[in-house]
Every structure is written in structure tokens, then in C-alpha cells.
Image (cartoon, rainbow, N blue to C red; front, side, top):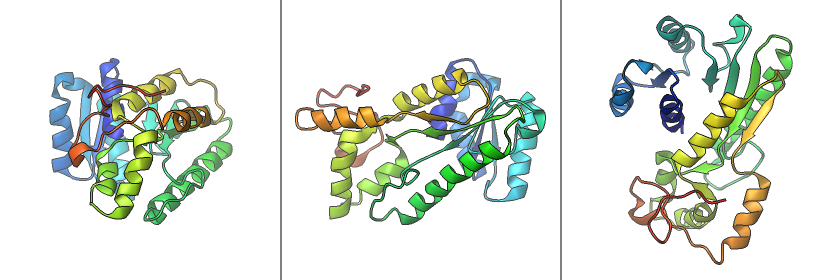
Length: 231
């Protein structure tokens, strides 16, 4: 999801700093984005470590100056008195439970609480804090959870075929709303709303989608093999 967001921001003319845990991962992402030239910059580092986060922040500031939008970090723009901070939500953020996802869901629930509390704490600072709720995007991590051949993974496939979307569709939506967000109150940018879920449940018996064919990377695939947005 992070790579998808970076690509959309770059396509819209913004400068972007990306991060991966290893030098190899960072170099691989930069290679894919080479067409954007000097508008993209990569910094390797494990953001679970404080010094790595500080290095990432300093490198981003040195390369491009101040940050207007920062995804998944709560420290870069606070001192400058302006900007927006967004954290990425996921399965578990609103209490939804799924077997085999205890640790992941717990961390996302914690992130949701942390972000709302942080937004309350820094009221009046000039910094807007919000969350990004991408719903279920067909990422490499998701494919790994549904492509192991187990009975549980097949159950998950049935769920994701009705509720998931391709990364490009979701990233474009989130990017547009991040750029348009204004004001200083907490904001939740949500792709898969309750209305969309309801509509998809209605059409499940009539519209079959299959983007796990062969469990190989690719776009969301409909029966006519055409990538498209669904509701």
C-alpha cells in the first residue's frame, strides 16, 4: 500500500521520500520509480528503531525541506507547526476479528487509538492528524495469507473476492483525499465505507471477481480479465 501511495503522489507531481527496512528493498523500489528522476528519494532503515526514524526524518528534510504529508509517522511535521500526519489503519482497527490475525489486528487497533489520542493532544499546534482506512487492498502480504492452500486460506479468498480492491484504485482515492484534507480536526479517510460493504453484499450472488487465480501478483481481475473499480 505504501508503494502504491508513493507512485500516485509522484504521478501527480509531488516529491516523495520512501523507506524500506533494507538497502536492497529501498533500491528495488527506487528502480521501479526511476522514471520520476530526482522527485523520489529513498532512505533505508528499520522504523521500529528510534535512531532509524530520526535518520529518516533528517534525510527527508535535507533532501526536500519540510514535509506536507507524512504517512505512518507521528513526529516529522509537529515542530514546524503545519502539515498533516496520517497513520494507516487495517483489519482490526474497528474491532473486526479474523482467525490467524491476532497480532496484526491488535497492532492496528492500537494504532487507531493512538492516532485519535495524538490528534486530541496536539490540538492547536497547526498540525492535522488523521487515519487512512484502505479497506482490503490486494497487496503481497494479503496474497501470502490466502495462497498457502489451507482450508482457512480458501475461506479468506471468498471474503476478499467480494470486499478487496486493487492497490492502484485505493491509493488514488487516498491520495486525492489526503491532498484535499483541510482544517485541524481529526480526519478519517475511508475507502471501504459501510455503504460500499452493503452494496457489495447485495451483488455477491450476481458478480463474481477472482484476483487470486494462480496466486500471482497482478491487478484485481474480473471475469472478463479487466482491472476495474467496484463500487
